[in-house]
Length: 109
Image (cartoon, rainbow, N blue to C red; front, side, top):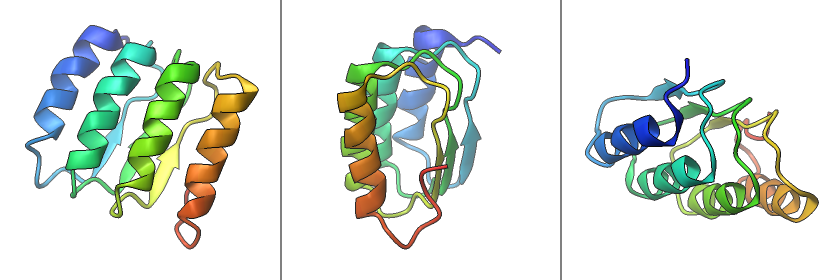
C-alpha cells in the first residue's frame, strides 16, 4: 500500500463524517506529516474509531505532535499503533505523554 498524503487526505475527510467504522489500518502507506495532520483533525471529530494503525509510515515531528494532541481530545480510541515512524525525541516524548494521559486504555503499542 502507498496511499501517501494525498490519499489519506481524502480518507481523513470521509472519517470526519464516519459514524460506523471502528478500526482502520493505515500501516506502511508512506503517510507523512501532512497526512498525519489531516488525520489528526479527523481523530478529534470522529467518535466511532477505537483502533488505529499508523505504524511504519513517514510521520515525523510535526505530524506526531498533531496526532498526540488529537489523541488527548478523543475518548473513544482504545488502541493506537505508531511504531516505526521517524520522529525525534521531543515529538516522541509528546506522544508518550498523550498516551500516558490516557492511562487505563491499551494504547501506546
